[in-house]
Image 1 (tube, rainbow, N blue to C red):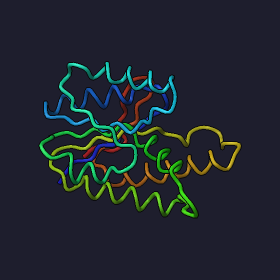
Image 2 (image 1 turned 45 degrees about the vertical axis):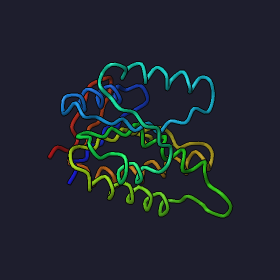
Image 3 (image 1 turned 90 degrees about the horizontal axis):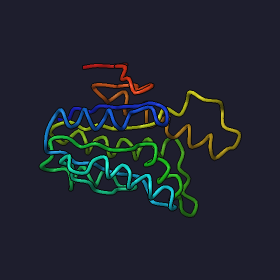
Image 4 (image 1 turned 120 degrees about the horizontal axis):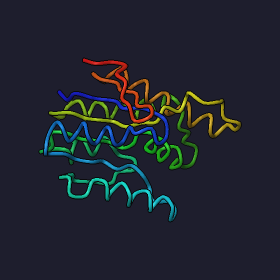
Length: 180
């Protein structure tokens, strides 16, 4: 059964760098699961910067915007560490892929999150999840932003409960909120 580690923090807090360093300290057989869609030129440049950061460091990278369960069931075998960066963008991708009458609410996102968590727990080794802590700021001024914040909060709570370690990164410094 996989050990699950959740790393959270604000934007540009150092959480992704900490996750990379932690993963690299655990094994040389590492899979990076990138959830970020390249929706515009600026975002594509961000993705390129993150790719350069991992270059030459022994990472295998796959892009997966939505179906994390599939990654853990079919693509994670042979890796000792799987790093998912990030849950926040995964929720964004799910929210903006709504079709027809399907509405992504707390119950729907919880079901999807639990599905990939169950698949992840079947892996051997360690699964590291990076997420943003979106609930520390002011209440957003529009319904869509509030729904997004709530969906991310739901996922963070589910993962945090199932994780053996939960780390909050602030100013580049990791603080253990939960340690197995």
